[in-house]
Image (cartoon, rainbow, N blue to C red; front, side, top):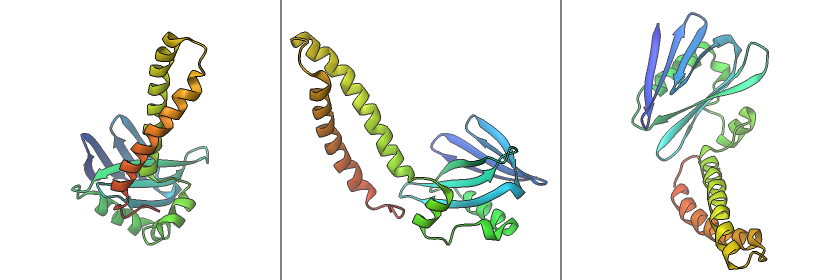
Length: 173
C-alpha cells in the first residue's frame, strides 16, 4: 500500500492507495473515495502553505470536495499529486490558470476565507462587548449601528494590515 504523509501545523495528513480506493486521514476526518470517481484535483500554492483539493463524486453521485493543507516544508504532497496524475492525467488541473481552476472546482480562495472568518468573529465579539457598554449608558442608543460603525473601522484597519501581507502570495487572484 502506497502512503503519503505530510503535516500542516500540528495536523497530520495521510493519503494511501489501496487498490481502487484512495484512503485519507486528515486530523480527525477519516475515509476513502473511489479513484475512478475523482472529477478534478489541484494544489493551490500560498506563501506559507499549500492547499490541496480533490473534487469527487460520492457513492450517491453528489459532487464533494476533499480539502487538505500542507506546510511548505512537507515533501509528500507533490509525489501524491504526481501519482494521481499518472492515474488520471486529464483530471489534473495543475496547469490550468488559478482562477479557471477555482471556477471548475467551485472553490474560493483559502486566504480570503480565513480573512472573512476572522471578520465574522470580530463583529460578533464587538457586538457582544458594545451591547453591554451602551446598555449601561442609557439603553436608548442604537447599539447595533454604533457597534457596527466601530466594527467596520476596526475591520478596515485589520483588512489593510492583513491584505498587505497576502499581496505577496503566488495565488492571490
